[in-house]
Length: 220
Ligand SMILES: *Cc1c(COP(=O)(O)O)cnc(C)c1O
Image (cartoon, rainbow, N blue to C red):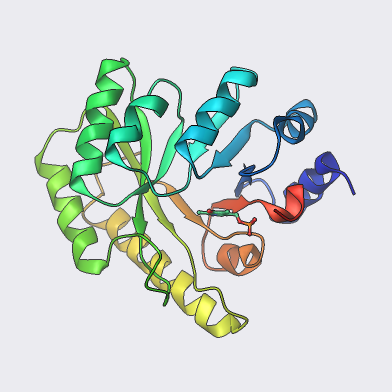
């Protein structure tokens, strides 16, 4: 099947209430253009340099999401155009995003990345750090960032019960924040979880933004 057909099939499967982010990392701009020409506008990359070079070559109405770990000294390169940053995991990073967004006269949508997997290597906030950062956000004025919700990556395992447990945990965090600390933030509406291997489980546990690469573009 082709890229356009893969996207079409996925969209039918997930329905209108779940947003599909096509993760194009490592794939050439031709692949992105093929998806674009079929009507898709929402793409994700995990490296700043790759994101910037692709953005420069592709149509301006693409909605670009940064999904990978972000160093604060690189925020300035994406601040002029990025739609959403999924990987905010420190106050320092948030401050820099706010500063660079202001310089560009923009407001940047951000998700707080929460560590839900068993693997040590994956980035993200633990429960305590999440609550602390939310508190900081409420006290300080980050006028040029909009906290849109949470992002998480489940453990890479064949054991579906482990994955479901992790997604369920993140959903509970999300709902709790939405009903309490983030109650006055009308933009807190996004739960980004699920990739090619686990998006059906993620949706079952409340995800409304899935990040899918290989199912659309093939193996990297
Ligand atoms: C690569 C990546 C994805 C997509 O992975 P696939 O298995 O190709 O669907 C999703 N989220 C993040 C953070 C990624 O780095």
